[in-house]
Length: 115
Length: 114
Image 1: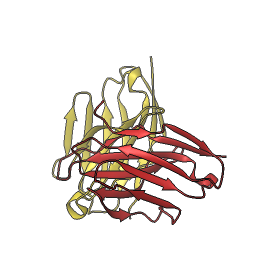
Image 2: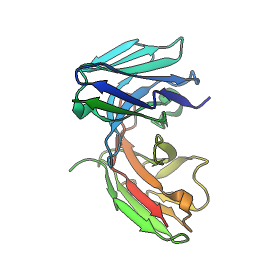
Image 3: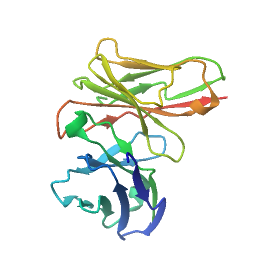
Image 4: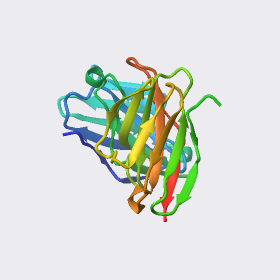
């Protein structure tokens, strides 16, 4: 019940295309859903995050869509660029209960954007 | 650099040796987290501190692992009698307490046990 399932494992997109990564969770106590971007040899960096009281959040080219009833959320990268090539992790935490950002991470999606 | 700092960046050790990693969080952050990331996987939570108190430990943190945050500032993670299965990236993150605050990750310490 603590798992966050992420798909696809890898993704190849043409420059200018839309990259879509999906995550699903079971624990309805989760109340904070961030997406992290990680480049090789670097730590994860927060891209965008959402709480379950909204269905969509957009920041620049990055959009999170959230479906509370389906317990699913997704990351959309519009106008994908070669510089977006990285590994993306979804995560979830139950901040309201635990008071902490103890994240459960997905297994990651390796995105490659072709020039 | 005002981000989360981890030292060393890389560590190669022989099986059975002890290793210690250091994390310096963002200075005003009272919460500090340790995660472990193996190749091709997402980070897994190990433990977290609020100030100097260690409030939660994962089942992944065997008796060979110990973490401290003696003055509520930097933290150390020690692994005793290392095993090949301990080879991983060890990530530290810090945050404020409170809602809508971001957890910032360091660049990690990559441990290789040979």
